[in-house]
View 1 (tube, rainbow, N blue to C red):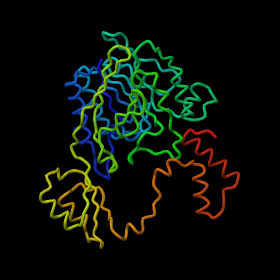
View 2: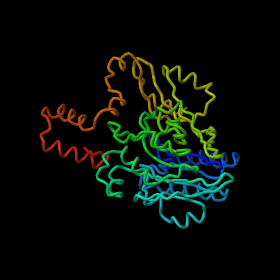
View 3: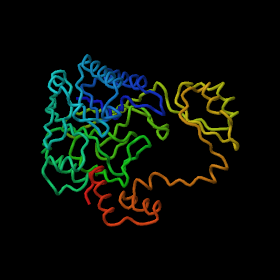
View 4: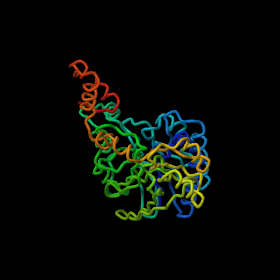
Length: 377
């Protein structure tokens, strides 16, 4: 049996104010074509279907179009909610969807029954595991011992009682520790939402979403990555559709089909006059999203206005020169992602107010951290 693994569609997302609906439809059409050529039977959509929990109408219409095309191709589609989605909204009309081969995760209630498929090698159990927080699992299982995301995912998976003698796939949307991230993802300070990939290795394949760069993070544990580049930090990433072929138990073959963007993200660096001159022979798509870095020592008046006559979709224009290099004093994001959120806030407060937090304020901040990230002290 063959599956296509995609995730992080973020339908309805804009990039520096530019709508991406046409770009997203262009990518989804390629997914459908790839499935046809590869003779895929099912598509796994590993969360973040939409960019916001209240999805924009154009995003909803696009997803409706995609599902309709998939049904017409007689494809099964398995969808889970991500941290950007509303699990309740995605699971609307579940029974009608199932009748058409469309399976959606329900909001987590402590019980995940697999969808059981059959092929010549026997059953394939597909577990739809939506994005969860510790507080959600703790409440569903009535278990106060769940203190963090690692505990939550471990307890939730143990409840599934996976039959190791059969072939099993899990579709999940969580942050694996040490996965390589990009600037377009939601960063939780301190990495408190991170879990070990070892939790997933009992499955024959783990179709993960949440991280936008394609990568393998454990034995048959893979982030397929987003369909599009959603930040300049991803400009060197090749976006793909992951094809999983399950044969007999223990045999999993992976292949990767490249996606061609309608408008790519590119970076152009140089002096203003050089960029103008080279644009005359630029064979790339002028409608690409462009990150411009000027190396002129003096600021060029109306530079972005002039360049947008050639490249209309310029995302941003910055300078890299003697002045900016000498004045650059920005702490890298990686250092924040590894910091403890409570300690980071204490330092921020001290720097801003000149006095430390008192005991009452400390307890309040801890409660806020718990409410936002599901972390328990």
